[in-house]
Amino acid sequence: MEEGGSSERNDRVRRRVGLVYDERMCKHHTPDGEDHPECPDRIRVIWNKLRTSALIDRCVVLPAKEAEDKYIQYVHSKSHVDLIRNISSKQYDSRRDRIASKFNSIYLNKGSSEAAVLAAGSVVEAAEKVANGELNSAFAIVRPPGHHAEENEPMGFCLFNNVAVAASYLLNERPELGIHRILIVDWDVHHGNATQKMFWKDSRVLFFSVHRHDFGCFYPGTDDGSHIMIGEGPGEGYNINVPWEHGRCGDPDYFAVWDHILIPVAKEFNPDIIIVSAGFDAAVRDPLGGCCISPYGYSVMLNKLMDFAQGKVLLALEGGYNLQSLANSVHACVQVLLEERPIIGSCEAYPFESTWRVIENVRQTLSAYWPSLANDLPKKLTSQKSQLLIDVSSESESEDIEGAIEDIIQPLSALKVDEDQKNASASWRPELKLVDIWYASFGSNMWKPRFLCYIQGGQVEGMQKPSSGSMDKSLPKDVMWKNIPHRLFFGRDYTQTWGAGGVAFIHPESSAVEKTYVCMYKITEVGIIMLSIWARSRVYLSSL
Image (cartoon, rainbow, N blue to C red; front, top):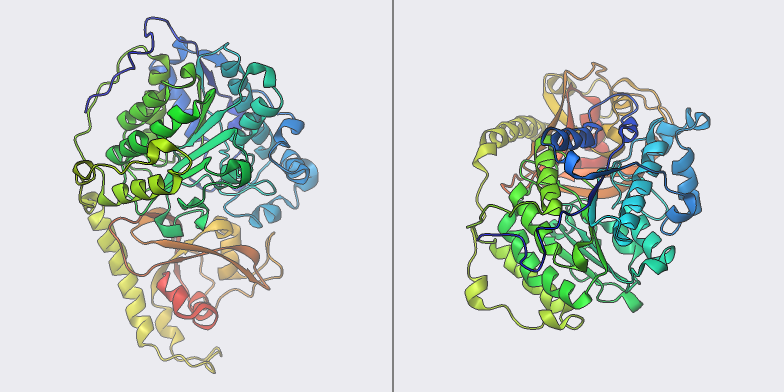
């Protein structure tokens, strides 16, 4: 399959493409300098890639601007805006970490407030200039990302919902620009849960999200990303979810969704502007996504969108955590926006069988609202499918992890632990002190000082009372961020010591199509095993 620029667009006219980047957004980082996937280097590598290839010279570089509170409050509550706006001030120095620990996968530091308002404001600025015709299109290279940030709380690395703020600004603040219908395309590997909710009843916004769902087990781990979530009231039919059943989806799967869902519906909707929640964590080799879109794939997906709204397309960075894949994919997209040369490449593979099943489910659910989806797809088309194959490159790593898990579970399963053996002289404890385990952390426990309270005892911000620690107070022997081939189940939990926070369990059976990214601590530890036996029983043991 060859892809090129549309014949309907005049490639001879040099397009004015805007870029927004500001180093101040790099001031948002983990407070203790610990490694984290959502790091400042994400936008730095993009900017360096565009600079070394001289693409920056062919674009219009826009200054970043802070968003005004009144615009952010179109989609966020005043209390939330006040919190994020002030969280980096001196008055929050003693409480900042405790506040962050209350939320799902959030860190905060002294640079978070400035970065958040710059990210939102930069997307608003770029959207306005594309809408009024000063620019043909634009790419806002911003962080922190936004599509998980709810009305009343930050979530999933996101502080403000940058795309939702920009869309609401155009619709409510600048009606004279003639933007009456906005198509938001969210191709981040995670469902844009917050964006969906913000436009749930709004027919002016068609929200389209294609994401890993894994039947509700992939982050953010709810049913909100299901294909049956279609909007409500005036917005019914204007919310379209395409939920992948597993990882490994790549170019042919996304092309099929574009051709048989998104493009037909976009023709009917006829948007005045398109805003892309441009996450690149579905890219090949991304450690969190487990999918495999190539830079060519992103080029084709974007190129197809350029046929709408007179090419008025704004991309705002969301996720993407493999720095090389991220930089290469953004570079490919900027080349498409410039329209200086045809897209060169091909895709000979077929979609997975599950892809056709998902597409047919979505079409059937939405056909009452979009006539272009009413007809059944030809059997000749849907019979062209690929088999789900094992990622050979990760087999050795999977075997290492499997061996480690078996080495832990086997001796534990042989232990006889009674409820009355909760005293320090239990005979089985010396055996456990000889076992090294990898403790996989998630959410607030990714913050190392909090995790160390499990080991050494003590209390940090976010905890309700001090922890007594464990029998063996030795520090972790090693720390690593790692992919493991297991499904991750998300939930919520609350204890008298640790307070409210996220909890995750890893399924004990490995899967060739699952990729879970965790921060792992290597410990020789009795106390944590005891805690799991008493409080979480076999569920926790299965998570080792």
